[in-house]
Length: 71
Image (tube, rainbow, N blue to C red):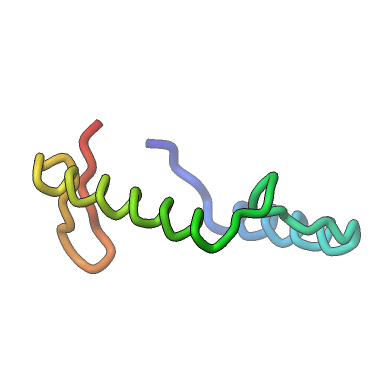
């Protein structure tokens, strides 16, 4: 795993935020707008996929901020 120096990362990130604010570049969530029914269906599919991974043992919640995911 790559090691990152916190001070360097913080400086780089703050300069990125300043440039982004100056350009007024908003991040777009999706390329197209989804209706409420389609959003609900996609969330339902995601939930069922997560539950199947839990049953197969591919996805485990180890703690409040720790998970194990096997590919």
